[in-house]
Image (cartoon, rainbow, N blue to C red; front, side, top):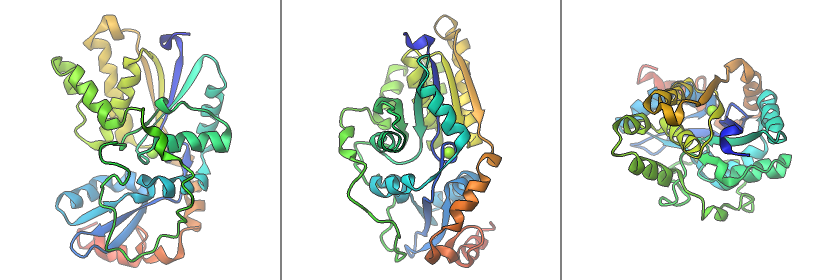
Amino acid sequence: MKNKDILLQVFDMDDTLVISNSINYINETKSGKTQCVINSGQFRDIKNFIFGLQKKKIIEIDYSEYSNTDISYKLLQQSEKIIKYMCKLNSAYHDENQKVAIITARGNSPQQIHNFFKELYDINIPVNMIKCMNWSVNKGNNLSRSVNKGNNLSRSVNKGNNPSRSGNNVNIESQDELEERLLRKYRGKKEYYYLLRAKEKGERKKLAMFNFIDHGYRKINFYDDDPDNTISMKTLKRLKTIDKSKYGDLDLSVYFVPQKEHSKLHQIVENRTREHLKKYIYPNGSICKKFLKKYNH
Ligand SMILES: [Mg+2]
């Protein structure tokens, strides 16, 4: 069956398929100390504010619970699943007219996501159908995104025995390589170039999607809980007017996963939040509150 005849179902991971206990640490640049910890839903909601503080070099964001493959995998295994979308994924996987793909900001290892579905659900999503938008082979495994050094909060996550076998990614194109390749390919074509250029990191999801379209998929559903991602993804519909003969049959549906689907699950996860982080938890932890108040938040 040709790609153009297949319905490609593309899912985000965090807060679309799973709710995990993974958190981001917000560290003060000057002291290197953690001031706040936020979960994925909170990150989605206040990211513009914290990116602003990061630009002013007031804070650094430690993403290691998402970017460190071993820690991330462990937390994924313990995550709560969002049944509605997991069921959609499962039935698409078992339907010969459909295919499943993942586009996620989590981690830098498509192999990790592959192993998660294979080991927990016996769902075998090919690694090349999993796009981790922060994955960069050049930067290596630690992602060099301010992994926290001066932080004395100990992580309660057991580093384990490398269950994610991240070493197998070698022959799969990283998101950086994909971005470079697509921008090179379309550099001379202004409309494409402006459509594909990712100004913000979040817009890299669009490039991953364009890669699927470039591979011939025309019937595509995309599910994500972040309105910024769904808005950005919808701009790809412009392809239909950019080149009608090539993309006239593009049928891209973008679905926003509303908060009500997962707020209950967040409560469950938050109830098992690590005790020693209580003072740092956004928005009520006393240390976090005090810190953010300084910046009018
Ligand atoms: Mg998400």
